[in-house]
Length: 210
Image 1 (cartoon, one colour):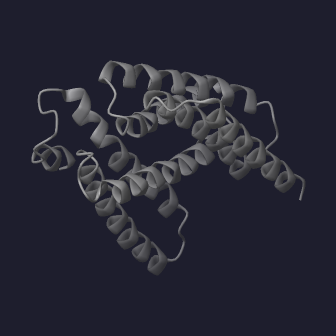
Image 2 (tube, rainbow, N blue to C red; image 1 turned 120 degrees about the vertical axis):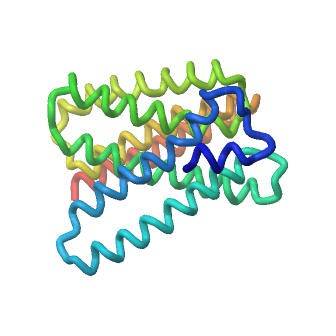
Image 3 (cartoon, helix red, strand yellow; image 1 turned 60 degrees about the vertical axis):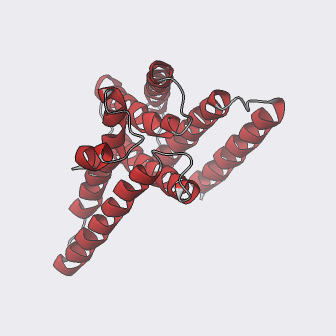
């Protein structure tokens, strides 16, 4: 369905299957994230409300994907912000869930790497960079996140704190690469990201102690 909707857009790269594949990622992972949340619902009425909210959320994500194909679309900025927020929401759900498994890094690291790489593809799509570079940087993000999880598995962290820490690193990696692709990676940007990362990790450390 997403593929069919995307193909109706006059600016979509119809000949490049790799571009269309990127448009599938956020809706597909949204369904997985919604299933994870709904699995923990015990009351039937809450489950029904959750299904309705998940359906509305999925429609909003698909519309956001469509409106972000064209950078000159008057709805682009709002849609791009919405899609980015959806990516980070999906990321925290998947990261916390995978980390909560507490399985061997041989299994959990590739899972985190795949989720991170796919989500990074969606974020990098907004930079309108050449597709080969987009896939290369997304692969680098996925490998880096898998290695970080490997280290995190030696710590005794709760699933929420572990997932939030992974989200901080994911935000840092993807944010810096986005700035680089846009040609805006300056010393000030480096300082801003370091400040955000340090602040977020400090807050999470304090929460872990409480």
